[in-house]
Figure 1 (cartoon, one colour):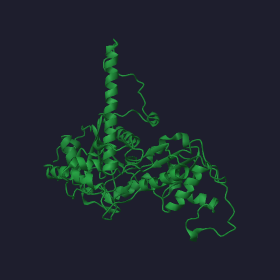
Figure 2 (cartoon, rainbow, N blue to C red):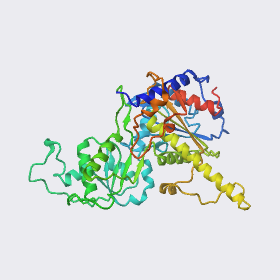
Figure 3 (cartoon, rainbow, N blue to C red):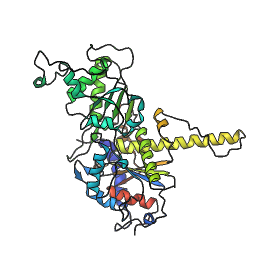
Figure 4 (cartoon, rainbow, N blue to C red):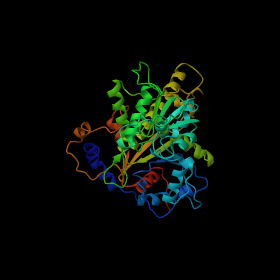
Length: 439
């Protein structure tokens, strides 16, 4: 199976050229500039995990080598680092512990951003009864994010045993067991791909079509369905297998199409989070700034580097956030020019009230970054070892878009700023761009 093969082949030539240009930097020690106690980093690093640092549970050899360059002799990071993963099946602390073991450096949970981390900003749902779908300790994850009333798919099955009928071996023997009382569900949160897709698809559709009251029949709703919030839109992800595996994005495709087939209407999302959403990168930058502040670094973080292996999530998301930052800077500049033209005394100063583009932006301080540069590695979903087509423009036109339904395909957004062999080469490239010398 080939993923985005026409477009990947088109990028193959670019990859081969850039891979041939390996950094001349020495790989034998710490960054000399960064080891200086007066060093104030003005950039932050966003690392994807699957396909960049690990393949399934197997570490990628270049990962540990890369992170030896990023810590000083005391084990402290010399620049702010956040791990941005679309995984959502564990608590942040659990993922931090896993990364510490894999990379051989201490990682705190404040450096880890799961796909569900931005849910902390959706406080209007924290006191509502929410259904959660996914794997792992989903109830604990939801409560850790601030949700007080949480219901799982298994709890719904127990309360309404007659609803889950696809698997003949799991059908209840009539008469069914007594129904357990559940509060009315007021919102649905999808953390990640579940284990039994047929059960989750059936019960989520039931909840949406009964407005959270599973004791009633399906209704031809004239009003919007219950709020639906989804984390992780990855259609595919890279584990130990030779080809990518289904991700939560594939589950969402199923849910969206079943809902439309039954109702004739489009499924609507209150929020989509995880890469490539702007919300996710905005929150990741917030964590970068928080980390810099805790270390006493006063230099504003103006540049972000996002390292990933997936064109349709890591690269698309980083480039889309970079476009957002550029457009935001252009608006600020035009406002400043307008004030000067109007004859005010202010030159480049802006009003303290920032224009808010999205509701979630009110929960975080405005970004300080002015750019987000994308770096693609060749150790995961992206595979450069394909034949380069004679007509790259035609290959782009034939590209199958693996992004989510609600994101439009823009060829410019899936073109990486740089392509390197692995994460170690990515760190070298960043050091070179930032003029940090390795001893």
